Length: 119
Image 1 (cartoon, rainbow, N blue to C red):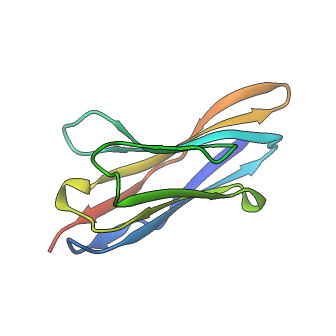
Image 2: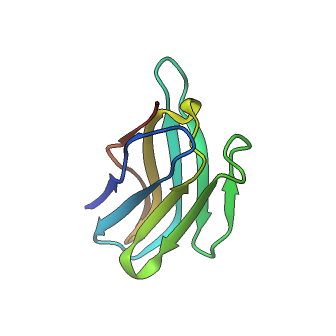
């Protein structure tokens, strides 16, 4: 069994910064990709940023230049560094992992962490 646990959410003023973490644990053989999503009230879930096992990254246009995704393979953890936060970034942020748990590759979701940007 594999689990993803997010942390680092909270309340921040516009222009502020937060760092989210997504830690994977369990019977992990390898991690192919980790992706951050967010869902604001009344809106559909959207992809925020993703990182592959090789380190390739992709971002939603709305966060390019403000957010950075990174990973620590030794800790099986992905991070989302969020700078210059805006009220429209307010959402529940969740991570998804494409993880090899022998012999299969499974898609695993974390429970989500709330990010609120408000003065």
